[in-house]
Image (cartoon, rainbow, N blue to C red; front, side, top):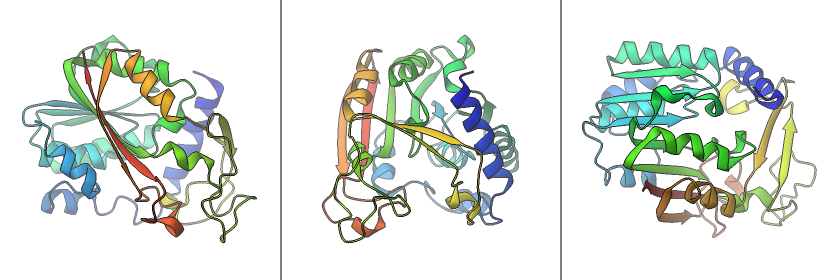
Length: 265
């Protein structure tokens, strides 16, 4: 396992161990009582267009499992399998699957290391906000994804828009609240390291173990898919902030999020 991935594993497990009591507390109730909870309206609309009843669905970088559990239940899927690097999050997700009585299982593994047991297993692959940035090589990432997809299987990616790579977030040194859409970073390549923790999960500031992530332009995402036999069948772009980092320019015309659909040849 690459050193930066080992570091991210330790940092994510630390964050989950220090999670706020509210983080994940609503999973059971919402999944039992709501239609497609934990998905934004745009993604929910797309998921309802995809035939998921009886399908086997895989989610890569599944976090605490809430999205996959939601989709399997609301979409009446046959089975869901989620992958995440953090062992404690995976254990939590498996507990929730058992509590909800849903046919989901979660594995603690680095995506790069997923083996042939899952070859051509999935009818649908789900990738959601905050997944792609943890991998330095998207061609290698999508090569693994493609091998796990059945011929004709679909993929849905709901992610932060690559244009946000150029923007400073609150707390960054170049951040200027009067010029929130000023481009201060390179669009094409930037490696980030930080010890600021995961506030959205812990609800507190702390000096964390080191997180390392990577920004990727749109070309790397699309090329990574296409070079591994995944045909892009749809692209939607939105001015909606789905990561919680750009609320000051939410719905003001700057591309902040996107949905990409594809199909394995």
